[in-house]
Length: 79
Image 1 (tube, rainbow, N blue to C red):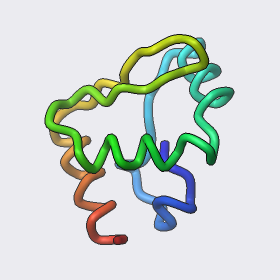
Image 2: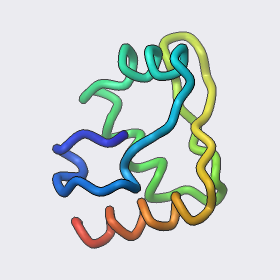
Image 3: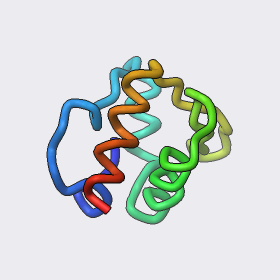
């Protein structure tokens, strides 16, 4: 999900399970230019859905609560 620039240590909490269409959109539109915005959205999330823009489409990534908590903890430990 987050590039090595934002989360250098590999951890299973950093992986997403997406349908093939969403995975292709994510791969196409989520690059280093917007990765910082995604990182900030995860860190400051108040709910389990993180807003994200995939080209012209505004959508979200919905996490299971424990997955989001694990990801936030990993990010905090790396910071």
